[in-house]
Image (cartoon, rainbow, N blue to C red; front, side, top):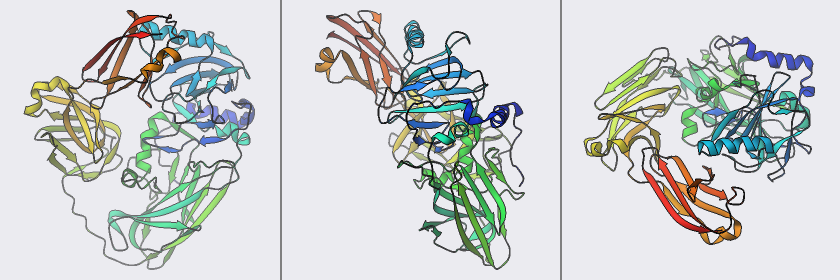
Length: 558
């Protein structure tokens, strides 16, 4: 096997090597004192990233105490509207960092520091680093309590093991294999066969074809010729749960020769978007799930992947049956095998007529046309592509710029500049760039300069200039219950450019209101924020990303 990857910093691998030498299962104790079940595993496939750790179930409730897994100190505390919600970062004496996300609450000392920062900055989201000796913790102490904050859809603990600089992520099952029960093997759901553009054919055509897997067998036998690649859609299961997980290890063999493999031991944050080079992005965005391709794009240095000298492509040049085998394994060694054949049948290789701009992944590409400019930095594309630029018009009369007949993901963002349509120029400062889809539009921001607006885009797709002159939506929720419950609740959101910030004051004094991007709720616990009983004057302002502001003032009784 030839490893197709870029240079790796050796120091990032040292902790794992050390752990294997010292007995990894002894380095950390379990985070909970009850049976450990997972709702998510390391390396699971997520939108634009790999799942960075393990999601431990907390018996369906918030508030479960979390153990300090090894001696060290709390290095960082973070609060977000979404993401990990409340999170702690612990630096351990053994050289690892661990991360705890979606926490219900912090320990008292850290909570006091966080609240002081929130009040001094008048901001709910904060990110604080601590000196090494400030908050020392010992193995077995209660670190915090698990919850459901941030972008979480049920109580659980998101747990990560990182390198000391926090950039390299390790599979926590290296340390916790023995506390997580698993006697169930991975399962394949479908196999895809891909003809290489201009060099291969599947059933005489240039499109990839999917073969279902039923009762453990690949259903179809296809005719192929020339250079073809394979892909697989598979999931894993574990004992005692109904959850579905990512597959730890996969191998592709053709005629008993290993052609491609993947293994999720570690990944860095800089590699996250490479998931879009490995996955069949077109099928994914069309709602057909995660097909992982067993061949390498021209620019895919993901270290979890290894391929032969042909980068996983198979040259079918003989009229015979070619044996294909997929081997799937989980971290506990449970395995499954799927064998099938493809027929080598001589056929004409379809000639593909490319239209538009030929873009090379190893070059900086710049496309300029009437009303737009797109600059794609070198190394941002995953492979060479041909992109035809077309235009259309939105219902509001703004030009739509369409970069290609399908979505093309990027590793690093490209710079997109659009001319602001003449009918929007009077509202130029309220304009933003919008990515369009069949479900509507999503904002991608932008900076206005004269009659143009510039933003960064991570996918070549459909874009247009939009305008937002409407302030964020701010409405009371169950106002009659506020006094009895001691909680003030509002619904807050913005359907245009997106919510940017908010401020809340009671009797002219800043008071902390917590906001969840998941629920769109803005909440204040009056007792916790030391608001006295009686009548008070409440003032809330909220601003969107183009400066539209809503202000609300009202009397509240508590």
